[in-house]
Length: 358
Image 1 (cartoon, rainbow, N blue to C red):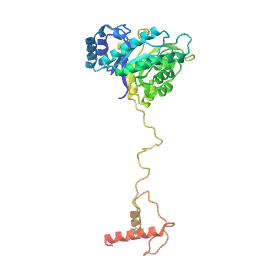
Image 2: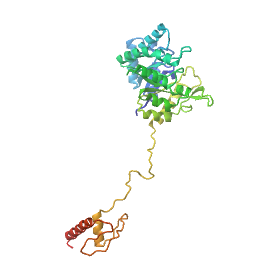
Image 3: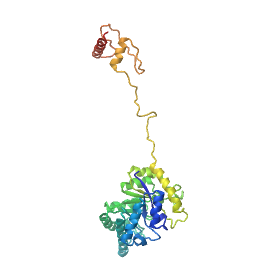
Image 4: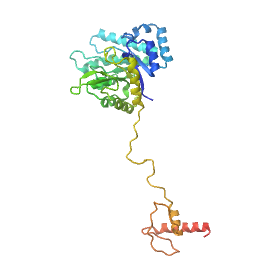
């Protein structure tokens, strides 16, 4: 199965790394994304990840549980105009990249940030491209890939594409949140083909929107919101997506959502059902299209031999030949037939009779 399912620590902010690894294994998840752990926003500052021996212990913990650490969710965007603020976000992202390498984690997810004052959106996005180019090179040296992720202010796949295409480096790819896309009325039929093979992670969550205005109302369980995951999954298969559906919702701020212990197993079952679903092959035929269109017929010579011997043909597809009168010694020539063909057939008949001793 190419598409795998994991969950982000955002759905269980109170769990420590031991709980995350153990419960992911028990529930049957392939991988996890580490972001907020025990309310610590910056993962390299988490109590369990301060020293190399602690990092090695965490890595072994997940390996023993057969759960992949897929991504580290960075909280630091690079949209700030102030050089010192942007430099701090840059340095924190470098720390996340270094930690990802030590954990054997292939991705670091980076948000696109928010609008700055009344500045045009493209100007804010363009300012992030130079530092992201440098970060992508650093990430590649550490065998890590950055994932540009849409945010509330930059929710469109066009915004994500703008940055990923501007960086234009193998160390930068895309993560996509379809709920944020719907917030700007962008369906998966637009976002998935636009981002295409650049998508390496889909943040799976769901929400309801006002029918009249399209405004966001509230987060919902995966099977109850406005995102059609059957359709989205089909589109992802169409672009040969082989990454992760990463269950992700802000449990810390959305208290109406069920607990992770209750929500995760149901969400996993829901997504696996759609990933494994295979549509029946479409056909214009009402019958078996592999069956031959015509029943096998006796060979032409066999039919002629049977006709000369007066044996009734059992072939239902055989059509009676309106033969012209001819002498017994000469070949029987059907109307419109070539005399040379008829002569060859008559010769074949004589040889068959001679072989039978008639």
